[in-house]
Length: 230
Image (cartoon, rainbow, N blue to C red; front, side):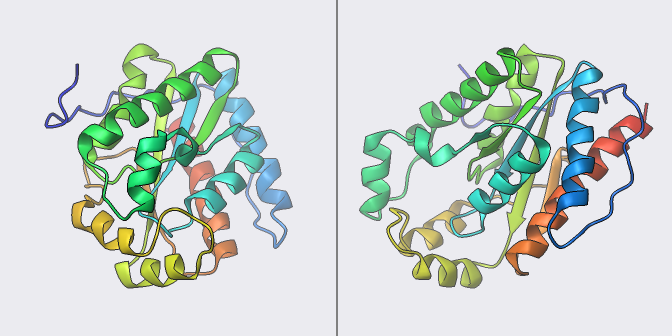
């Protein structure tokens, strides 16, 4: 079993072999972006590779909104990480009690296994939400590439200040993750380091539409870069 105190090196990820992606022209309704991104997903699958796009960041950063947008644009299934928490984990968070490493272990493993299950059933990839606050949490997902060498794993880190996210969470209604949990998440947050080359960092201090289109454009750029680097 992997130790939570041991980090895994990022597996070598060879880019897919596929045709050149179409040019990207952002529009206000996202139509051109969706056309280009669907072509990207098809190209990746044609090259024999599949993808996990994991949208990460603390509470309030917009993981669900960004992930749903990407999943729709990329024509990939969306996995909501929060729905895989155990009832005990949810009750702890609702009570304002931060989760420990051991609380998160089975949750992270379940997310990895569900992603692999859907891909093994024929999906070209999945879009997954998970806070993944620490490097070792991200490494749990990276283990999937050791089981499937055709799999490429990518993280989209939604970056914002604690003050901004506290304000956003305070305005949310009916979610078990209260504002008091934002500070506890920042207490343990390990922003992705430069050697985590499978991470895209997105500034989420802008409007949601701007963040969504930026994330999608960066995803497509990464796919194109993978192809061009062959």
